[in-house]
Image (cartoon, rainbow over all chains, first blue to last red; front, side, top):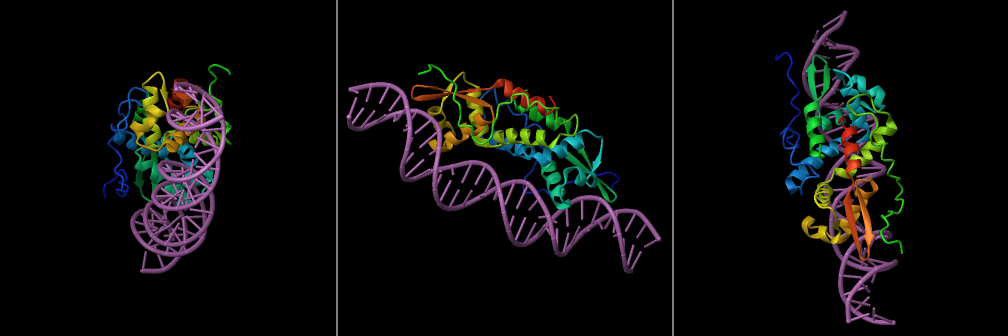
Length: 121
Length: 121
DNA sequence: ACGATACATTGACAGTAATCGATATGACTG
DNA sequence: CAGTCATATCGATTACTGTCAATGTATCGT
């Protein structure tokens, strides 16, 4: 059912996707509140990993990529890839769409732009 | 001697400051090479901590801040502050200038801009 | 020279994160 | 329905990171 539902990833203890909370006042403009800093740090931590950066760069360079197309280029095991897609998705940076057997991943340009803005963009 | 030498922070096993290596091809444009990803991840990891984000926001909001002015607002011990300033400095995000007893910290806008650019800016 | 101040370094500990094998779930195929 | 394929989840291991007390190293004032 539901022909193209975006994956709701198991409310993994963190509720991502406020989508504008990231774009608090830019870091360079004024002292950050503790809650803003924690939220932004959480999202930056999702990016601060070489495997996830490469994963994102692959996903963002293509309109659509499925998990099976990542295992090879990233040279990591399937559970590891699954772990990393989950971390990025929880941070709202990519979105998974499940169609049939496959999960198709898309980058989330709005969120990435929000991160840039939070970095003083 | 040397009236205003910028702090050379003990070549801490990582040599930061290529200053343009960060601004590799934007993550969103094309698949990242492993070395680019590792370098960018290292710098993002320096940012991906709530205490360091607040520290940076304080330093960046003022033309000059000394370490003693950070201990209070961040509510961390002196060694912890020293640790975090070192991490940010090693990543080239802030720069320390030692004058007399004090170390004065400045934000490094160029590097922050380079990070934004690496994030698809 | 002495004590005090500002900061760095060291060492230890606790919490977190990356990785993978094994296993579970769910979807197509015959 | 049985078998295979694409992913997700679990459990364990290893490695890293944030934190602070204790200590070291300059620098300043007296």
